[in-house]
Image (cartoon, rainbow, N blue to C red; front, side, top):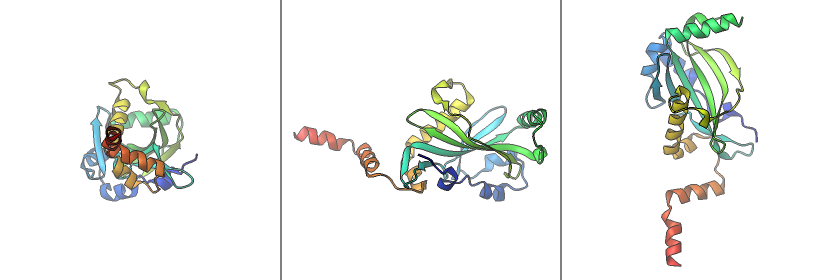
Length: 204
């Protein structure tokens, strides 16, 4: 099945640009509205956030929600050392440098395959200090989540996202522009009311 990620849920970068225009990413990201962005961690190089309002499930061509595929927009705010590192690597690779004097962070679309326990970056955007995209890269390979160690920074980020998703499934379904299959509705209802099957067995 093919999915149109951008049609399913949007990053909300346009709104972010209006909110944060004129501020540096390092200063602005901690002030992101808590009802939209969830902070996960800060390292020596970046602050890690995901957009919980735009988190959603993939939708198939028939318009049905795929509870196995989770789509998550994320934002990283770089510190000066990380900014210099990204700029230096682009310059060394002779890549386009327009606007990179204002580089402040990056935004990624993550796609989790919950059954296969993998994560894939479907789109990566370098961002300037107004949260505007400087460049776009697409379709990175999938990575097995179990390959990340307990102390791995990305691994911690991904695990935190999945823990949040597991605890907020109904909200994420509500954010998704699609319909649930009857079989999935039944499974969700059974998960919410596990005692029903037990009651039936007791009556027998």
